[in-house]
Length: 178
Image 1 (cartoon, rainbow, N blue to C red):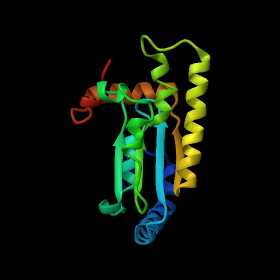
Image 2: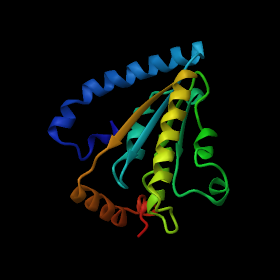
Image 3: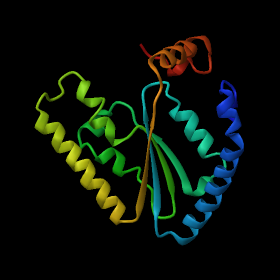
Image 4: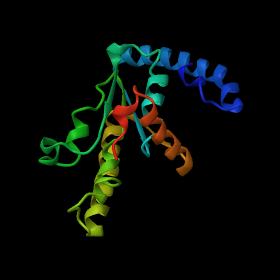
């Protein structure tokens, strides 16, 4: 697989199981698309350089593009900021029969946006957002969307190495921003 480079021996030993997992995902997606009663949303969160893009590439390798989409969420655009904070993700949710990956998500409204200049310092504001996210996810589940949440943890040292590597590799340099 593409991720084999830079893997530990333990991780390489898990590759056959990964191959079986990917084959199972391919078959599950076919059934999901055929019955169109449920949807799958995979939410990837992690620090910069934690491997979110790589994981999406790896996990979607055998998926049929007809029923698969991946969306990335960064700092809200002016249009997104003019709407309710859940509006930008609502537009990208999977239809029944689809699998959608989010690279970052509505959780950014609790994590990163809280650190932006001018963000509210009122804890009740952030608690209300957390409650709204929980209620929204319960609504999605009741409507047939299954949500898989994945946090990719990277040590501070590994993150530093990966960020510096972006400067050395021209094909990854676009990802680097001070």
